[in-house]
Length: 182
Image 1 (cartoon, rainbow, N blue to C red):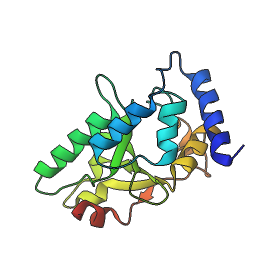
Image 2 (cartoon, rainbow, N blue to C red; image 1 turned 120 degrees about the vertical axis):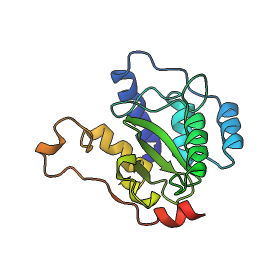
Image 3 (cartoon, rainbow, N blue to C red; image 1 turned 60 degrees about the vertical axis):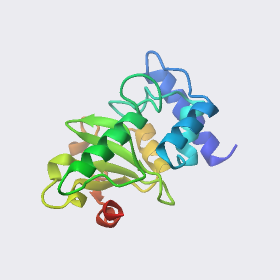
Image 4 (tube, rainbow, N blue to C red; image 1 turned 180 degrees about the vertical axis):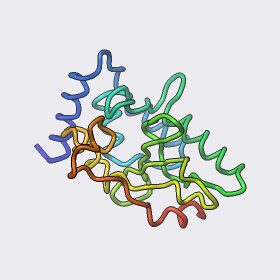
């Protein structure tokens, strides 16, 4: 078993143990349709999570958004944020950065689908000032790392995180300005 297969197995086990009713997984065709609509491919690990675990409904706190379907989805949230960003005097949402989890209060966990490592980013709109890049932070260097943090229960978002010195805080995303300007 490869490290990624092991990770997917552990994520699926935790998803089943912590979610009351997981939605069915997305089909390969549905993932391909979503990628065509987005205009870019999902990182392989993210695509496998949607195809092999479930179409959202598990993960840290507020849980992964469904990729496709009715209501709020990864696809609809990406389109909405990109459209709203384009209408602003100061754009704030880069192309290829896919919101996968809504933390509430306008905050998102998002995957950089154009980056080599599929970093997980934190969008914090309350940090927006005169530069859209100021709202972006690196939560984890890769999607796999982000999932490992969730599995270990050591994320910044956990209720007692402020009581632990070893909890990594998100750091500014240094390439945000360049990516927003693309």
